[in-house]
Amino acid sequence: MTDQMQNPLMRLAEAAADWTRRPLPAPVAHDARRAVLDWFAALLPGTVEGPAVALSQALASERGQGRAVSYAGGQAGAPRHAAMLNGTASHTAEFDDIFRDGGYHPGCPTISAALAVAQDVGASGEEFLRAVIGGYEVGCRIAMALQPSHYRNWHITATVGTIGAAVSTAMLKGGDAATIGHAIAIASSFAGGHQENLQGEGLTKPMHGGHAADAGVLAGLAAAAGVTGSPDSLHAPHGYAAATSDSTGNWSAGFEGLGEWTPISRMTFKNHGCCGHIFPTLDGLTWLRSQTPFGPEDVRRIEVRGYGPTQSICDRMQVASARDARFSLQYCVGALLVLGRVRLEAFSAASLEMEEIRAVMPRVSILVDPEIAAAYPRRRMARLRVELTDGRVLEHFQETRKGDPDDPLSDAELIAKFDELAATALDRPEADALRQRILEGSDVPGTSGQPMRALADAGV
Image (cartoon, rainbow, N blue to C red):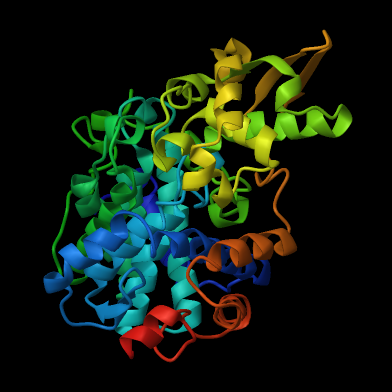
């Protein structure tokens, strides 16, 4: 491996390795526990409905031997199998976390891989948390180095998520910086997932998270077994950054604050169950309604001015499924005005058929604001103009999103989100016990003997 100070891959590998040995600050450990709690919240709805349920049956013969639990089927097996299914499940309900500055969902691939490997190798709770922190450190910083051009054609959670998962795996297998570096290099060749399967029709998008977790585990295990990769995989002229962005990587952006702050302490936890590009609009409308109450029947027109993906991904009038609805700004605005919030209920079969929601959609238009677009991805903003039927015009500039680091969910709000989503798969005593283990326990959560219905059903 080349000089770590000149090679971004080795700088990142050393940063991850440092999390295996440095003192673990209590605030960072708590932030990691919050991320794991949020991951379980996003996961549990996807274990009872969605692609992971079908995959758990289709891949049953490939479960293999091991102690990693797939919560979609409640069976223990090989860590790659569990990582694939849990990664898919945790990216299904669109409630998984966001690293805003990289436009990246690190939790679904990274925690899916880390938990599966930690369960399989019998890691301690602290070793698991350290691996999650290290995986976030590397994945989020690569995302900053690649964005925003990477997102033009690539789904960054599917791509960079593979690398974050590989780092966590290599850490849990006892890898040093050199081994972690090889895991990054190997994972960069496995990292795929294009925008059409994010923006277009179909149910592939949740599998992007599952594949990233699975491929990342493979890369990490390979590196731990002695397989090597090119040390220049990230920044070489034919390397990963050059292949998937406009340059060989903006590494000054990627290394901003390295050693001073760690990405897991700057996460966005979703307050709405839809695409994060819709959040500024929903938060802005919520503020407007708090100042001047109005309902769907009072709206003549709503104009939303946002950044590129606000329009390119979320300007969606054709909504035939819950998946479509979660990426339709028009539908989510209608749901907010009719139902009062955009959580699980908004995407139920009954809500999808509500004429009151559908009636709002043609009144919502989306434009790109150059000033807002220039601040993306580090700022997620929206300008709103609401024309009411009585002639009043309401305007608001939404500069933040609820749940972002500058307006975070409190522990109480995050727990309330977990309780709501966990209820889709667990009885209240089971959910309470799991939440307590995640936030206060010293072992790896969700392992054998813990009160998870899936585990009890499977007898493990």
